[in-house]
View (tube, rainbow, N blue to C red):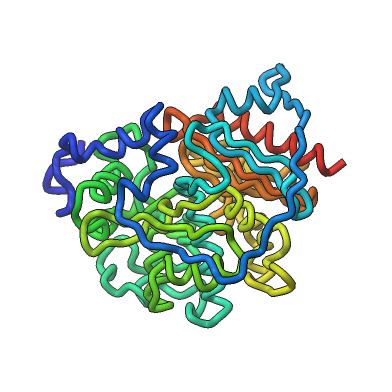
Length: 392
């Protein structure tokens, strides 16, 4: 058991106020909170551009069944069983199916994306590397954030952050009250500097040796990006991504309550499902939008998988499900869907990209729990089936 002397300065014994995160994420309230985070937290706008690029729409019924645990289910059953709030399917750049089962959801609703934000942070890092604002992925974290000298992150590289192989931090589990991620959440909601929580993380493995899913790693990645660009995450995302995509609405990051206020690069982006689908189109199209190369092609390709054995499908260990691999802040799938990959967020947020099938699917949800292996496996089975339907 961790003693009070081992805890970061920002950590306090949890009170009712500290448990806001649990209340925000509890059903049925989360159907409302996941579309109204700007009512609950400070925010910074990710402004869309003056040019709007509408997505073509040919919305039609999608009479598809998928098989899970030796039974066939319809998409309507998927939405009921996995608490879907928004479901948007694009084929060859056209919206071919769109539904919003959530009580407070619609085309203009900005959805809480949780760790799907990590995949967007990776895109922004790829752009910054291409612009020369970040010198190299082999650069050390402390080249940009020298205030982390003397912490477990000293000596780690940007590449290790991208692959989540820093070897820093414990197993990310929401069920353990004193875990690093729960301390992080309580500090975000209740005040204090989350950098103190991250600085207190300890080394649990040699750098590069094993995968350990870590919101701390992506938070560091976001801070490196801000230091390198001289801009906030929201401003850089607006100028380099949101304005280029021709989005429907401004997005936003919610910020920590305590000062210095900071966006959570691993979990606080909120955007409409259609605009998230635009991000998927960017990745399905090798980083090109409207004839302009927004993200380097090689950066997009590396997000579909790599040859590192510790990141292969089925090899992630206790912090990843068996049907996933990992690459560049995206989850890879392998098998018959070798090029398919997905961004994921707790409570059932998905950005599924299948370049071969020319399919992008956004599924937002309000699961009762942060993680659910069974609901995740069922969702992946359904998304694969939808992609196969359009690939025929």
